[in-house]
Amino acid sequence: MKFSSFIQYLKSQKFLLFLLLIIFGIVPGFVLRACVITSYEHAAVLQRSDAVIAQMKIFSEYLTQETQFPEIDPADAVISEEMEEIGAIYDAQVFLLDADYQIVKASFETEQTEYIPDDEIARAYTGEDICETDTKADIFMIAVPVWNENEDDTLGIVLFSAPANFIQGGLWRLKRMVTLFQIGVAVIVLLVGYILSGRMTRPFKKLTRSIQDVQEGYQSHFEPVETFTETTQLSEACSDMLGRLKRLDDSREEFVSNVSHELKTPLTSMKVLADSLVGQENVPNEIYRDFMKDIAGEIDRENSIINDLLSLVSLNQGSEALNIKEASINDMLDLLMKRLRPIAEQQQVELLLESFRPVTAEVDEGKLTLAFSNLIENAIKYNRPEGYVHVTLNADHENFFLNVIDNGIGIPQESQEHIFDRFYRVDKSHSRKIGGTGLGLAITHSIVTLHHGAIRVHSEEGEGTTFTVRIPLEYYSE
Image (cartoon, rainbow, N blue to C red; front, side):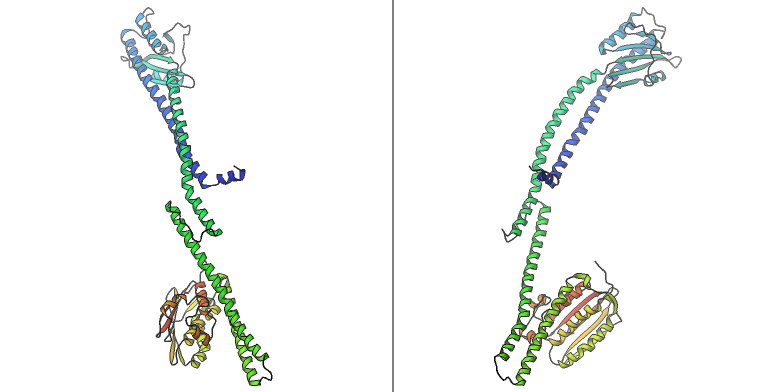
């Protein structure tokens, strides 16, 4: 394995899962080992100390009942035998100490006359049974007080001192068993961890391969991976994303095709008109002027398409394309209606504006005027003689609402979901007749969306159309 591949593996989710399984599988074993060993040591010490203390108490009671401790007869064979027997059983030394720490008697011959116990053992002189164990120093000591019941006083102590090797033998066997168990568990955890980490990350590898296959063109659709809930959700998200990207790509291709067609049509018309003029001699001035008028009209149409395309490009830049200021929507609509009223009169369409209250909002006045102009102008153009266009303005505490209502030709139900698409025309022959680029509603939709608003359409074919626009009174940047 190359070093770079190894580094990638260390950064992978597979290694992280493997490491977590090792940690949660092996580390508890060391904790369990420490608990078992500690518990064994405590149990072994407790068992041995209980047995020794019981014998020491019996011996202590004998000393106070049968003799005058610490005035012990050196010839008392019973005491000597008892002490030697206890020492032989536990491979220990037994001392009798008086209240001044003087050695009264020992289970072995010694010239030592005084024994200075540590603070822990010295507490036995207060009447407590003391057990002190230090496995590292190989010390196991027990001190039992010799109690004078008549005077309620401690005459001395019986001191038991032995090595702590009785713990080491069983402890060594226990440690060996626990170690073997830990090794077995570690091997199992490593194998299971490696297998499980591979199994848990395999669906993600499959998911990655499926995405790469789609990207490189080896398959036309995304292959879902439904091993786990997470991979199922991720597959669905990837499938939706790829679907949206495909639709976006199709839309881009369609847009390029439509732009090419829309820009080519006026150029073709101008070329035909120009060729007709060039191919004729002594063209009358009237025909020449008509042809030039048509060419000028096609140039205006080309210019209109280019301007609308530039507007769309600007709007696609997002909120950066907006110049937000506080503006009176009522005044904006009054000016707009004055500009469009001559067009309505020419089409014999009645144009009405009804404002229910003063409305002030934070908007890009220029772009919003363009959006409302597109809606109202379309309502005029796609109307019928003696028809009407009714524009209403209202607001609540958060939004203002604009309704553009007409009784024109209407929009077929199957076309209503496409009317905001670029270059889409419901009736191409009628649209060509009245002019337009097919970008007006797309521009309107983009402007309303940039203001964090919404636009809806309701229409019945042959009865009329209603556009409803909702825009927040206060603009907020994302």
